[in-house]
Image 1: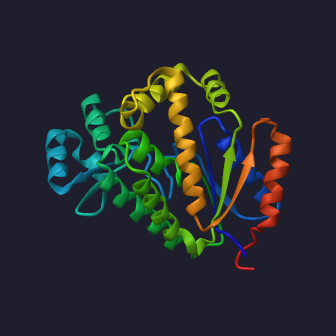
Image 2: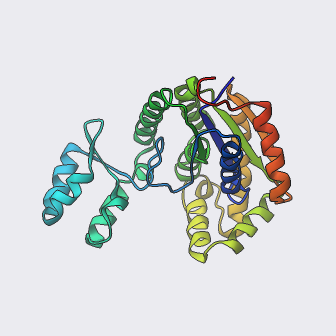
Amino acid sequence: MDTKLILIEGLPGSGKSTTARLAYEVLKQKGIEAEVYFEGDLSHPADFESVAYFTNDEWQLLLEEFSPFREQISEKSISEDNGFLLPYKKLGSDLPDAFYEKAFKHDIYELPLEQNIKLITQKWARFARQAENTNKVHIFECCFIQNPVTVGMIKYGASQTKILDYVLALEHSVKKLNPMLIYINQDNIGYSFKKAIKERPKSWSEGFINYYTQQGYGKQNQLSGEEGTIKVLKARRQAEEEILKKLTIRKTVINNSAYDERSHKITLENSLINYPVRKGND
């Protein structure tokens, strides 16, 4: 059985980006056409990164408020679901700060959960229809489980059932692609998170801790600071483990606690060999 979609999941600092890169290398070495999309990719085919949604009325008000930039804004817009999508980070930096502040408030991942689910699910379905007619293998880092869990549990404190239904809807939309899910695990969540803090800019850790403790699950459980964030991460892993049990697509869990890239690549390659990714429609 061949696959056209490889999904890389796991907690922050587990090695998702490295795994996505290595998976891409393995496929290329085997002569398989592939493309990898990392977290934050502005051109992601199934997810929305820095994309705002405006209803028709909100869109007209936006164009009126920033009329000197009307043409520039409209040029990048996409009509969607009785409104407009706007990839605002693709507009450059010459628009006023007030515009970007407004756009961020309408970001897909700032919308009410139901609206977020609807727009994201629609985009995954569109991606699947397009990918089904190509011979390319797409490798996605983190957007299949992490994003629904983050917006559902971490941001809004939604129920596990709600989050599970969200992920299952995405699973349903891509089943024809015969996807393979690779979940990267770590023995020590606290160590992995603290390692990520050391390796990334301070602004990342400050923003991450604030996001994880000042809303949703963290706020509901009165958690704070670095240690509170680790508690949220442990709860998140438990939620993700429950989701993994319910998924029916091919899945494998790889332990990356050693952070040994060479052995990790060998393990990953064995997983891909056991679930071969074939060339074209062979």
